[in-house]
Image 1 (spheres, rainbow, N blue to C red):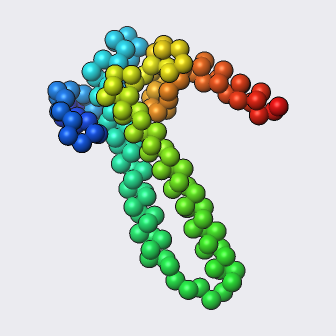
Image 2 (cartoon, rainbow, N blue to C red):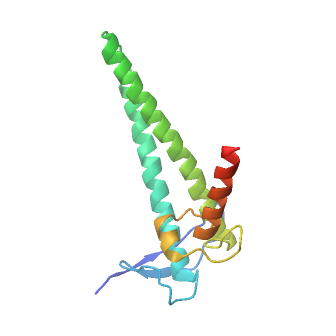
Image 3 (tube, rainbow, N blue to C red):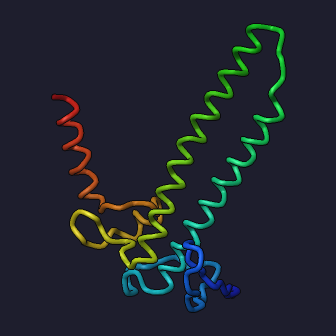
Length: 157
């Protein structure tokens, strides 16, 4: 028997009104046989996005602390070059994650605005499987594939 968890979802915009509590079993997964983007699905994806965002921000804090601690003078040129390469790679990774946090924030705004889960091109629902795998998706799989094909054609020109 699964234990139910209560979470009062407060909008990520500060000062926003509190939403009603939504009960989600620990093992809840959105299903095709329930109404699309019902309260439980919205709560599920909100939690997923908030948790993902928190993990990324925690990693960023760890990186900053690590970089501050490791600023030391390394006499060996090869060792120093290796350390600088590692730092550059870490900073590139963090920059990608910073951009990902912005996409997560945009997805959370779409949830607040009632637009989450719908393709920005066609207006059709994005499949639950796609949203579960990529909760920041803004296009249905078909629209994304068309977009990527057009991008490839223009890139090849």
